Length: 454
Image 1 (cartoon, rainbow, N blue to C red):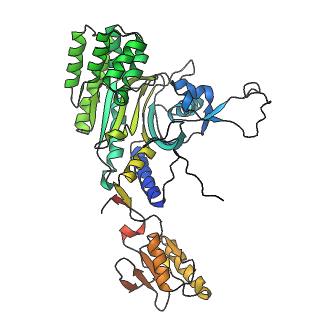
Image 2 (cartoon, rainbow, N blue to C red):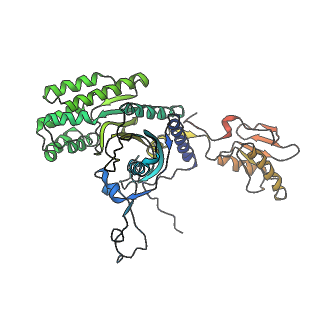
Image 3 (cartoon, rainbow, N blue to C red):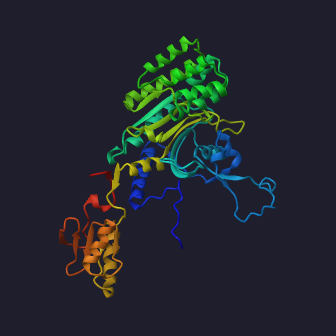
């Protein structure tokens, strides 16, 4: 078989990288559960018409089709079936899950979900076609109190903050409120609010001049209206002074509306609460638009301090109409962490490392093949006490067995005998040991993730 060509956009970590990923996932899960979020998992596929409800995403959806389907066969719709696609996020599947299970859920329903998703994007640094997301959402039945829009970004800040000990950089959660933007745009006389939001969402990618041109060419804005939109987007700050800046700007364009005032009140509440509970972590940034059309209130994006060029590693917002069956509406608010994007940066920038890539703490040497059963018994006794152990693959000279352990990162080698002995191959220390009582130091029992260079 010829050597396979790598397939871009589908990350496959080496064992050390997988240890880092598992550590990140466990830290996130633990924080989510501490805050009362219940874990769920949804199917990998959804009907295509449901996936395409989210806006301009059709080019990113992978469609599911049977390989042996005959071109002359009836289409799925003709057979009464639905065309299926792989989910490209976890929010749309979650909305469907809520509708299907509403009678069996207690509201407000708090859930976390950690799964792979698939998105047909052009692969580049931090952007993959298959990747792991970790989501938290709170959904209410009919209504959802605003305080959840304050709570969720702070939960995410805590979850990401729990990774600081292993060398993950500080995070900044950038927040805005769609009511502020919509109220301001309508006050200016711009009717295509969704279109304006989509263009403003491109600011970091194409710059203000290009966004202004798009607003004029595609949204019918005047140069003055486009200028006002860019001035709003330029406002940011970590305290309530941003509210007064927005209000003053709106007044200067005679663009103050009731919707704008409602959004400013909510934004102030979020910024003030965050300043008390997580000083410096949450920053109001009026350019955050989240161009997807289902957001209705607070919107969030999260960047790694010092690695802002990577883009947002965590985003989300408030949605009021994504989950509705025509009679009942289930408003919600949620955030999603791009775990693969985060892990990719941690590894590529050399920010963190795993102490070893295998779980094994002890390699039990084999004196000769006739006594392998004795080595197996030692390993079994260690495992029974929670010590991860493996047995040497061959009865080679002990020096070769030590080299085998060293290549795999296994810190200890056990030599059966009278008495048994165990050697720390890093320091060279060797002592008598009993499989019924001996244990490695706590730091060596399992692989750990530590800041690079430690």
